[in-house]
Amino acid sequence: TALLEVNHVSKQFGKDALALSDVHFSVQEGEFVSIIGPSGAGKSTLLRCINRMIDASSGEITFDNMNVMNLKKKDLKTLRTKIGMIFQHYNLVNRLSVIENTLHGNLGKKSALAGVLGLYSQKEKEQAMNILHVLGLDEHIYKRADQLSGGQKQRVGIARALIQNPRMLLCDEPIASLDPSSAKIIMDHLRNISTTMGITVLVNLHQVDVALKYSDKIIGINHGQVVYNGSPKNITKED
Ligand code: ADP
Ligand code: ADP
Image 1 (spheres, rainbow, N blue to C red):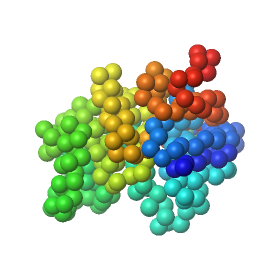
Image 2: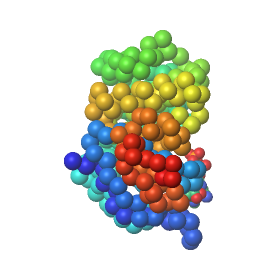
Image 3: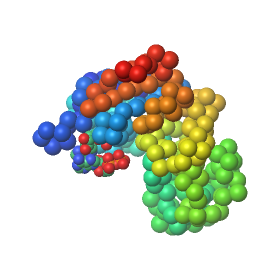
C-alpha cells in the first residue's frame, strides 16, 4: 500500500511563479525513491509541501492515512515526527556535540539552548549511541559538530532524523555538498536504512547516475511537472 500519495499538487509563489504543476505520484511503504531534475525544477518545493514547511496551493497529499494539507496543530507535530528531514547543509548546531545534535531530534529547540547531556535519560543516550554506531560515528560522539567533515556532519543529520523513529526520510540534496567518496558513504547508509529498517526514503538528487544506482523508483521533474515516473531500468537518454 502507498505510504505517501501526492495527488494533482500545484504550488504557486506570487503571481506568475508556478513551482509545481499538477504533480502526481505515490510512494510505497519501504520504497527508495529519487526525485531528479535540474536546479529550479521544483524538487525542494515538493519536499517542503510534503512535510508542510510550506502549503501547497492545490491538490491533495496523503501520508500514512493523514490528510497532510488539512492537519490540526497536534497532527502536524505527529506528521513531523513520522517524517525525518535530511538537508543539503546538514543544519546541525555547531557548538553542540555529535550526541547532543543527535538527541536534539527528539527534544527540539530547547535542547539547543540548554546544550547539556543531563537533560536526557540514560535510555535516550543509549539509543543515540546505537544509532551513531550504525552510522560509523563511534569515535566522534563527543566532538563538536563544527569539527567534523561534511560527510560526518551528514551522518549526524541522518542520526538526528532516525532517533525519532520516522516512517520516512525526506532528503533534500543530501550529497550536493559532498565529495564523491563521502557521497557514496551517505547513499549507502540511506539505502541500508531503507533495506534493513524498512524506512521509506524519498530523496532529491541532481546526479542522475547516483539516482539510477540506488533507487527502486525514479520521479523526474522539470519546470514543476512530472516528466518521468518509473523504474530506473526503463529510463532512456531522452527521459
Ligand atoms: P529545486 O529544488 O528543484 O532546485 P525549487 O523547488 O527550489 O527547485 O524551486 C522551484 C521554483 O520555485 C524555482 O523557480 C524557484 O525560484 C521558485 N521558488 C522556490 N521557493 C520560492 C519562494 N519561497 N518564493 C518564490 N519562488 C520560489
Ligand atoms: P537550495 O540550495 O536548497 O535549493 P534555494 O537557493 O533554492 O536553496 O532556496 C533557498 C531559500 O530561498 C528557500 O527558503 C527558498 O524557498 C527560497 N527561494 C528560492 N527561490 C526563491 C525565489 N525565486 N524567490 C524567493 N525565495 C526563493
